[in-house]
Length: 136
Image (cartoon, rainbow, N blue to C red; front, side, top):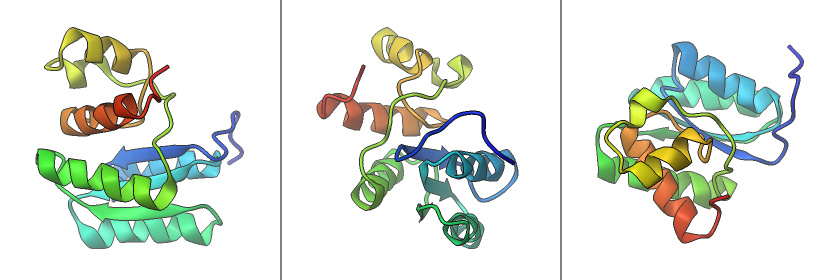
């Protein structure tokens, strides 16, 4: 499959990357040129997704973490950014998934300021991006 867009050099974080839709998203982003931080609760699943991305010639980092654990997600963001570089702004986020964030953060996320898929990930990714001036 040839993507209709390029994310060349961008860094994405995908939760649920070990299977199903999350895996498909991770593979699709890598196919479009993004480096992908793959997060899932099941280590062997997320490692398999990352291995497939690496075998296809892109960069990926597998991280086993539970998205409901804020400390684990903070560590996941740090590990991914350490290995691949800063997360890249630019993906639409589902508004229902960040309904508990304050309004400024919610607006930033809905406007497409991070690549992530849940509240804990949004919170830690956005904090990291804001503190380094990567908010557009």
